[in-house]
Length: 259
Length: 322
Image (tube, rainbow over all chains, first blue to last red; front, side, top):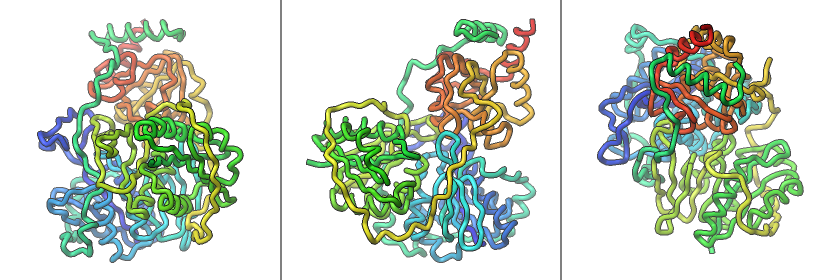
């Protein structure tokens, strides 16, 4: 089974104060650390688990600058066989243009399965995988939490609301967007990343791909970003730990919970 | 006069709440634009659904067929493409739900119409639609515009708008045949499985102590469980804790887990992703403890503590054993 996994490098924003840059269209990136998008980490792990069971190859792919190769190296260290980076230069990207670029590369590669994360942590759109599927004319499903291939189809589980999973059969090849929790992504050591440096990493320039002008025109544009509107929010309990604990216990009791 | 489409979402003979929320927003937009509002219903038994949505739309386009009993992204995108070409709606609203996420992006490619996903608001500026979205897990908002087009596709975040009936509309029923040339879908429904059932039902608890990613490692769950044993509540958690297998799924609060309604909800190290917050809207009082003062949970909590959760947990244990 040959699997292609699309990954993205994103800024780490949990417990970080984000500052809006002067263009007002993005955050100031100079102070941020970058990681592999959490959903993609599960997608690459799933691909490697499937490869370990069924043989074949795993190709990791990203669109970005040289700095973004960091996430590809991580995928290679986890067990991917090769990696591809498409350099978009200064092209403006949205879900549509990203999906067009990915499709232009993937159509030339052998694939039984294409995996993406459900969404990226930065812009939370959740659209690239399914747009890509439509460009490629492949079967598709989103928010997948289980994959069991058997011959030319797979039994998949989609996570719906309220703890309900939808079980389906899907014909291969297919594009699936992977939800967190589907597996337990393996640990990657610095040593492992160094060792994987010998694996194949190809860089493709946009000009090498069969893409029209329209294919590279975004369909949505961020006009501006802004801080959430001020709301009343929580009443902050201040003081030392003991005072805080006392206050929490008082509130719990006041609300009619017996402790 | 233009038109706004709302694609009805339903499951197991019930209309999903997101449908009513989309009809609420579409009513407001239709009024502002002097457009008509059309609910698009693809199902196997329209009689069951039409009365529920009929008075919230000017028209209900019903495509009724046995094959539409269960959701199929492939059938939805084929049928909707045909209807969009026929009616040219200015806006088409769909839910940003697992199913909406499975067909809306494909429909965008199929029709050539631009799509904005997971929108928390929809505005009209100089006659053009713009949407408000949340980015970086709710820490920032963005205002997004579209490339000029005949129509626009939007998926709406569940819970962004009320479910109440507004406006006075009398849905004229328009029945359409399912197109004959729809290819057999490559994805076929098998069954629904309930993964949230377990030894206990957190939705019935009156006091929940809930842990999130901030708990750090698996061993620390025990530290919180000890507190719960002393306090007498029930332990619950947010998604990352279940993803990492630190607690079984039946403890999970949120869109993909359980909706809870305790008198008090003590959130420890939970950042407050909207999927989680959606599960606690029925809670009486929310007390949040988080190191990050900008964590979205503080926007919905009644009381907040900006501190390390373990410091607070230890202090609570000390007070209770004193």
